Image (tube, rainbow, N blue to C red; front, side, top):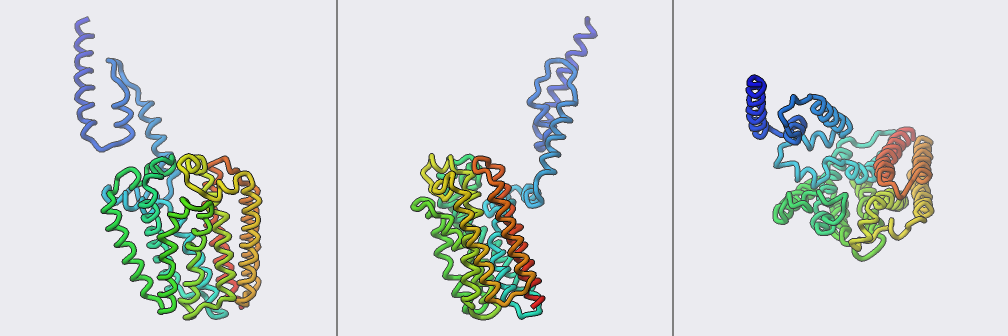
Length: 360
């Protein structure tokens, strides 16, 4: 009896001290599991700890490289990295591909595209996509706070102040300008003319059910800049069909994307093509896909492209058909997966541009 009471006192003293130590240690799944589990004088099991650690490891494995880089960065930097969506690079790729297509189509026959120019376009896409996200989140802070998917964004959750966001945006636009100044004057003026679209796009969801169209006009401006950066001018017989194809493609993927938020959007009064098309979405994006394939084909004909390019157009068309046939507009995970798969469409056409120009 005495021995039992002594052991009980020792155990309670040990558990109290151990809890005190845990409270000053860095956060970890084991610490969280221990502190949430009350110790009632019984010997605890490590199975809960093992299960928590297993779940943590599984989540880490599922996370992308970009997410791990952001999560592993200094704490003070993380809100800004999330503000520019560094943990979600899909937007940078979707902005870059039209630039890459046009740079490649402008390359001399039998040659590969200018790697230096492609690198400059990729850097510009990253910076300007981030600036666009900052502008979007500044305009939409109150809306984001009411939408489940966006309520934890840095500005919506007050991780970044409005003043700091303005200063950060100024820095982003300054870097973007420095990149733009590396191009010829025709391209500089062409690039500067797109700033109005960049600033106005976040407002469009308040006034029209077609904000995705404005996004398409904005995101595919690189189809004009990339070509002019190489040639010093735009061959409109190539650039306009390519631009139109890109705009229609954006209407496809961003309508799919918008279906993730359609219920929240309807409540807060935000408009989108997802709400406009509703159950007829598949029919609408089928039409946009036809415009996309037609635009790519006309641009290739006018650029004197060879057979690898047209094989790539067929592959991108097949991918669009796959998206339409497997789309479930009421399944958020399905919409997110299909949206992200559009990175592959951009890559397929870029490969076709490279091989088609080289094979000319």
